[in-house]
Figure (cartoon, rainbow, N blue to C red):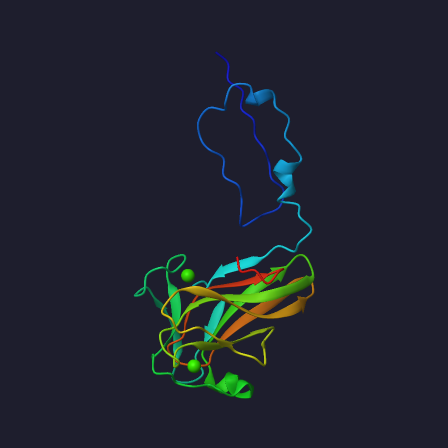
Length: 195
Ligand SMILES: [Ca+2]
Ligand SMILES: [Ca+2]
């Protein structure tokens, strides 16, 4: 009995690549045309989103006493781990004009293919009012409003401000505001909805 193999190539990349079940195709499927709706999800006119595990920064800085450390002691995180600004002492960098000399940072390089407006999203967990905030910014410029997370001990997304990004390379910064803050995933999305 002869079997025919069908390969479908998907153009571009997606964080939501559909998976194909293994095993034999159902009888008759080999002759069925591919419906346009099967590919529409990958060609929607929205800018693609960036979803980056916080524990995979391009670089980091430690200008003072704190540094971002890889941690795994609270379950429910995405990927291999999360990052926590240590020591967990609430050590403050409350002045956004002094981050270069005060705040430990995580830097993520992104390459924007589709120019557009992107919303900052960050998945965090806070336990007290002393470990619940961070600064963030694009291309090294801190946003004037920090993320002030809900301190309920649960991993959850928070949505920040949006940024009009040109095509090409940019950086996304996360800066210490309070020692003890935990960041699991960072993302830039074309709508206010987290990934
Ligand atoms: Ca706080
Ligand atoms: Ca993670």
